[in-house]
Picture 1 (cartoon, rainbow, N blue to C red):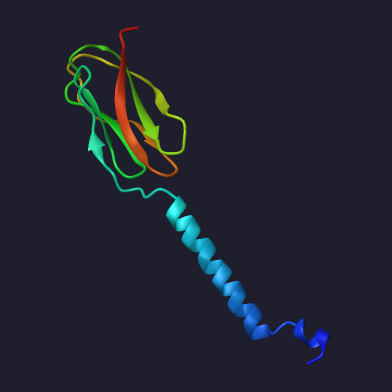
Picture 2 (picture 1 turned 60 degrees about the vertical axis):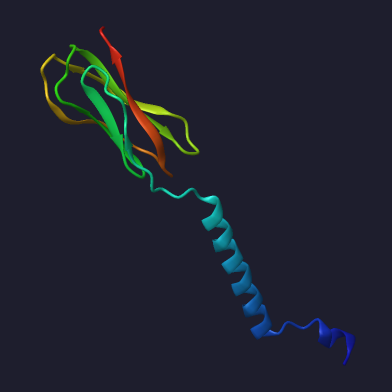
Length: 117
């Protein structure tokens, strides 16, 4: 066999190598990306609490026990924590859903902040 023939590309071999590299790349991404599957409920803050699923979180009040401003905050995996804005609720109000937030990968936890201002 001539020296130059050894270095000619075999199309089947090249395709097999390409598929192997692609499969390894997918496997690497699958093991590095966090799995989004946790859920939970926060403690109550003046009658309001936060629930979270795999990537989203939302606030609820039933009923508000102290008038004021409430913010729903989430702790996201591989992202900064963030809040959804302040909502002013009066004592006795029932709020089904407020302050919905979404994380790219998964929610680790969420909670309610309160301000009487």
